[in-house]
Length: 273
Image (tube, rainbow, N blue to C red; front, side, top):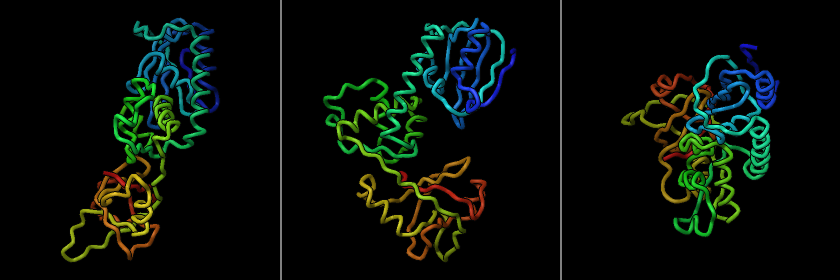
């Protein structure tokens, strides 16, 4: 068992860690879950260090051990004596199970990480009277109606549970709402017009009306949109066209070339700033 690899869907990480523990293995268990990656450092069967983004130690281990999909690979070899984790493997796995229970509870309130959290009170009223952790205070400024939970996690380098716990504290105090403003649109070419630069994208006016009906975007003009496709994201100036079909986004050819996608591709679009 010098090298061990597989899918987390086939064998849980808890089982993998227990296997390494029983066989007193030393090496690094590397993990990949879409755009997220991490590592568990094992010495003589004990997990002594963990990394998940910029999070290290026990918090990183708890985050990684709750993953239910992705890939893993264990490679034997010496590990650095970082020692950021002092718990025994049984204790670590038990605490990880508690973290998983917390995640499942929070998922009942926030079923999708594609949702955009929005706080509608200014400070200090927003957090007044709430017992918030330093992690929560780090996440809350990003609940601005434009960042989805994935973006908040990336911007703060906090794990899913930490971000959702911050959101739940505000939700429970009736100081936060979530929205799902993204719409799927199919790319069509933006036809060149006389005296008009190809420096923007266009979508139907129905989307402007829908977005303006959502509180985060009800004041002021929507002048930018976030466009996401498999493998990339762009922020571009937008204009609303009454003659454009509802399910279409018109994009200049130069944009498509720089994005590396073509006409007919499906993208997710929502307001940006």
